[in-house]
Length: 434
Ligand code: ATP
Ligand code: AMO
Image 1 (cartoon, rainbow, N blue to C red):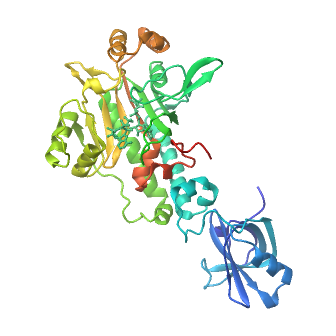
Image 2 (image 1 turned 90 degrees about the horizontal axis):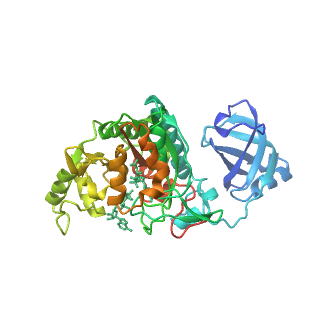
Image 3 (image 1 turned 45 degrees about the vertical axis):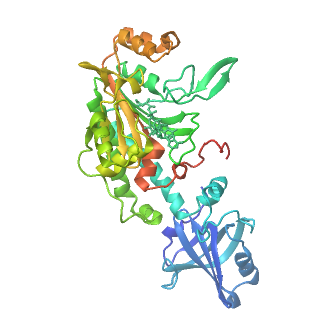
C-alpha cells in the first residue's frame, strides 16, 4: 500500500500525505480551499495564494472535480474547517485527472436517475449514502455468516452450472456446456439437501441464483444472492427458528455497527431491530385475514397463491415480519414434505416482511418413494434427477431448510425503493452491462 494517511486519521501537528478525490474547490480570492475526499471522510486543503508557490496553487486549484490528487503538508487546527483541521500543502500532485464533464454528480447536489447511476457505478459509489448501503450489505453478510456458525453450520459452495432446474414456475437460463444443454442454477436446493444428508448435517451457502423471470419489478432480479440453509434432523419449525435468528442477527449487526451509515442514508431515526417472536400465521388464517381487510377486489379462496396486493394487505395488517405456514401442497415444490396427517397441507413456509416475501422454506420429503411420487405429480421426470433421488436410498435423514433473498433482506432493512439499489451491478431484463 502507498504511504498515506486517511483523512480521518490526521491530527494537528502531523506532517501527512493524503490522497483522494477532489470533492469541491471553493475560491474566495486571496484564499481558496480544496476539499479532498477519501474512504474515511473529507479534509480541507488550504491555499493562501500570496504566500505559496504559484505552481503549487495552480496545480491544486486547476484540478477538476473528481480528479485524484495527492497532497503532502502540515496538519493544523482550524475551527472553521469542516473537520476542525486543515492541511497547508507543501506539494500537490494530480495523480489521475477527471474529465470535467461528469455523467453524474458525486457530491449528490444534482440527482441522477437509477439507470444513469447504474451505468456509472464508480461515480455513484463516491456518494456517502450509496457507499453506506454497500458497507451495510457487507456487514450484514458477515453477521449472517457469524450467526450460521453459531448455529453450528458449515459454509458450502455448490455448482452454478447444472443439468436440471428445481424451482417450478421460474424460468431457466440455458447455456451450452461442451455441446450439451445445461442451465444456470436457480437455487442450490438439491445440492444443499445432498450435503445435509451426509454427516456434515448443517450447511449454509451465500451465492448467486439465476432466474430468467420475465418480471420487471422493483423486487425481482435475474441474478440474485441467495442465503440458503439446510439442516439434517430439523423440521420446518426449526428451519423457521433459524430463518428468524438470521434476519434478527442482520438487523442487530446494523444497529450495533453501522450508526454512521444509517445516518448517511437518512434512516437512523426510524431504524429498529424487530422485537419479539415473528408470528406464525397459517395459510388458511392468512387468507381469512386478507379477505377481512376488504382491500382486495376479489375474495381469496383456498389454493390461491398470494398476489402482491394480497401480500401488501396482510403486511399492513400484521405490521412487522411474520411467517405464513401450512401452504396447500399443490402450490409448493416437489421437495417440500406434506403433513403426515393431512397430505393436502405442506410444511412449506414463507417469511414475510410487510413489503414482500423474504424467505421460502420447509421440511423436505426424505422418503425415496414419496419423493419419486412428488416428481410425477409435478409432471417432472424423476430419471432426470437420478443423481439426487438415488442418495435418498442410502440413509437420508429428515431435514429442513430455507432460501433467503439477500438483496430483499437489504432492501427491506434499509427501506430502499428498488432492489437494484442493493446490488452493485444488477442484472435485469434491460441490463447486461456493466
Ligand atoms: P418466489 O421466490 O416464490 O418467486 P416472489 O416474491 O419472487 O417469490 P413470485 O412467485 O415471483 O414471488 O410472485 C409472487 C407474486 O408477485 C405473484 O403472485 C404476483 O402477484 C406478483 N408479481 C410477480 N411478478 C409481478 C409483476 N411483474 N408485476 C406485479 N406483480 C408481480
Ligand atoms: P424461492 O424461489 O422462494 O425458494 O427463493 C427464495 C428467496 O429468494 C429470493 N428470490 C429473489 N430475489 C430477487 N429476485 C429474484 N428473481 C428472486 N427469486 C427468489 C426471495 C425468495 O423468498 N429452493 C427454495 C428455497 C428453499 O426451500 O430452501 C427457493 O429457491 O427472497
